[in-house]
Image 1: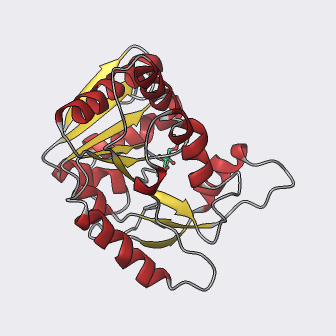
Image 2: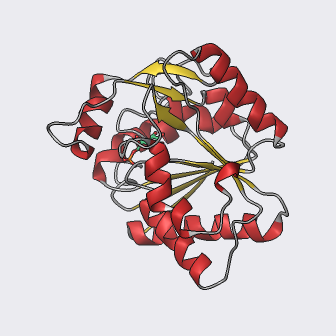
Length: 243
Ligand code: F6R
């Protein structure tokens, strides 16, 4: 693991954006793994800015998102499809047909859907760079504590802590999903590079467990200790429990 500590969250986003820019400008057909949540929003802002100033084009980029809520309609404003449209896809020159999320609509078989997502990633030659956030409980994607380290794309029930952490994003009259389709830990580990961003004091304990704890299903992010090319970008607050 390569761990880099920055003064603030803005610098974390700027650094992550440089990694993405380098990939997109180097590879003719780059495959990006994307995350949702609060942390990567500032990264997506940077990428939109780079696109506006003609530093990068997404024309040949394919994207695979980590996760999507179970049985949510893509047009639902709470879907991760809507999140990606709002924060990135609508503002850059990406072909929306090259953007994928692990979905399971009512009536579809989650197992078949999970396998199809894994196949789709393989057909595109695998993920070059996977962007990750981290949950306060150490989850990556929606691989909650106790997830198998060899898991593949499948349905997971969210823990109460994750539901509570994400409740800030839902209005009181909105129904908050409790299940999601997520890439597995093994799916994430297959990416050639993983870039985990963590900012804020509420991530400090999870970051400590990820880096200094043993590799354990109780902290899914700790699996990244076994990844050849894992880069961890932290702000000072998220790094505050290290050493
Ligand atoms: C999002 C995802 C999650 C988030 C994590 C952190 O696609 O897979 O693992 O990265 O829950 O979320 P934020 O950034 O909102 O703290």
